[in-house]
Image 1 (cartoon, rainbow, N blue to C red):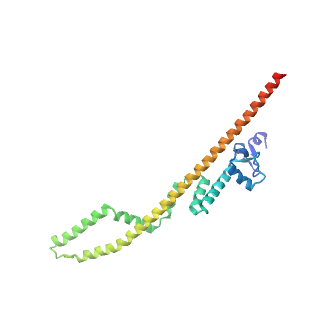
Image 2: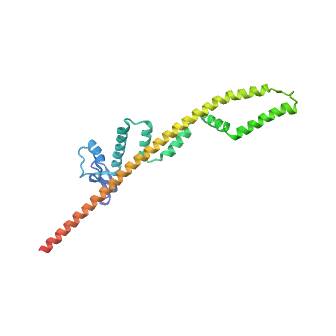
Image 3: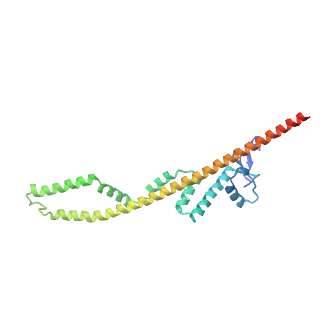
Length: 237
């Protein structure tokens, strides 16, 4: 391996694996809550050692999972879906929309379409026109001697049959609406939970960045103090 290639990688003290030098993270810059998790799995890891950013992200993920477990007692399928979305860095809302479209059965699609048409002005106006034409045809044009004279027994049979079919369709549409409300509540819960966890992880990353910058500033101050001491020693001589 060439010297230039060696200079661009480092060996992690956590897994003893090689990573790009850009991913190197000092143990001094890790928050205490995350460091305790690392120290629990790797007792030999100290603040003077280094690990890769990807390894640190894995422990951040583990910290979030333990936080949820402590808060909720146990993780549901919704919680695991949120955690997988955080790990894969995917947009949760798009996945939920796709899952909803794929999970709908043929009967549910028909129920939604029938309920949508039955509750529209198109259905009301069309059915009203049908009733008026039926009545006018039998009373006016056929002089009440047509195929369904007054009191319109055939029409009553049709209306009764339609009502008998429409009642379970309305119940199906109500059940479907309740399912949609439950699914919408699950979506809101998952999106809000992911937002909260991402904010917590963002705070952790900002704190890590601040600590890292503070360490750099301290090192610069140490170098400056050493330079001043050297200058004072030269002046004294």
